[in-house]
Image 1 (cartoon, rainbow, N blue to C red):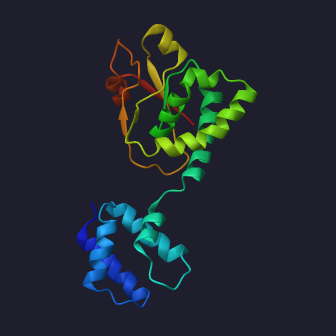
Image 2 (tube, rainbow, N blue to C red):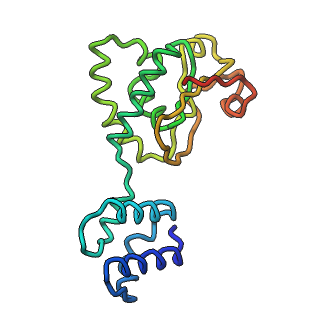
Image 3 (cartoon, one colour):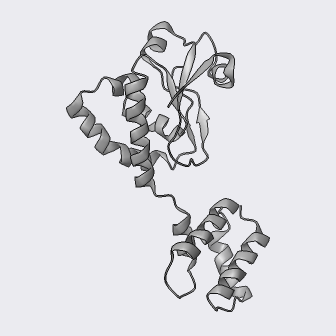
Length: 202
C-alpha cells in the first residue's frame, strides 16, 4: 500500500508544478484511486509524468496509473530474445530457469522447455507470434514455476544443475512455485539455493 506521506508530498509537488491548488477533497479522491500502488510504482509514475508528459493540465488519477504500467509488449520482445538465446546455448536436455519467472510460465503454458526446443522453423514462427500475448496474460499472475524441466531431468528424474538465463531488461517482482514435476531425488528449493551447481546462460 502507498505511503500516505509520500503520496501527499508528491501530489503537492505536482500541484506546484502544474499551478493547481491541491485541496483535501482532491487528496481524498486521488488517494481513493491510487492507494493500492506501491511506493516504487507511484514514484516511478510521477517521474515518468514529469519527464514524458507534455500536457499543461494537472494529471488525472488514471494517468498516474497508466504511467506506472510497464510496456508489456516491449518487455515480451526482449524476453523472446532471451528465449532464443537459451534455446541455442542450452538446448532441450538442460533444465533451466529464466531470471524473469513470467517466461517460465509462458513456456510451461506452451508445452514446456523440451517441447519448445523441438519446434521446427515454421512452428517457431507461430510460437514467436503467440509469445507476447501469453506474456501479457501471465505477467498478471503472482506465482510462476521455479524452473523448466529439460529432457535429461525428465528421463532421469533429477538434475545436477539448473542453468539460469539472465534477463536483458528490468524485472518486476513475482513469486515462484515448484515446477509441475520436480525431481524426487532432491527438492527444487535445495537446487535453487546452490546445493547443486547453477550455470548462467549469457
